[in-house]
Length: 117
Image (tube, rainbow, N blue to C red; front, top):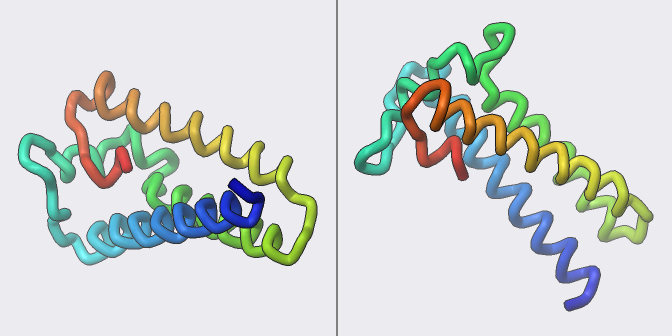
């Protein structure tokens, strides 16, 4: 697979992540229930103090992460050499997603499909 293909995949995944983060933010701001998969408790997860450090929902951090990733992948299309930045940010995102999954399973004891995606 070519580099251009990898960049395209990263761009699409970043856009999808941004849309999901936006959905989570909009439901929280509007105090609207998330569309949850059977067996999950999205509200318990969304309002848990473990996923709202300093009173800020991790959805905002996710949106910022995906915005930066979109910017970096867009710059990659123009030939800029930012692969190390994309890789580093990707590792950070993976570690943060690991914390969110840990918090849901161990600290909260509930899962939210949207937060795991």
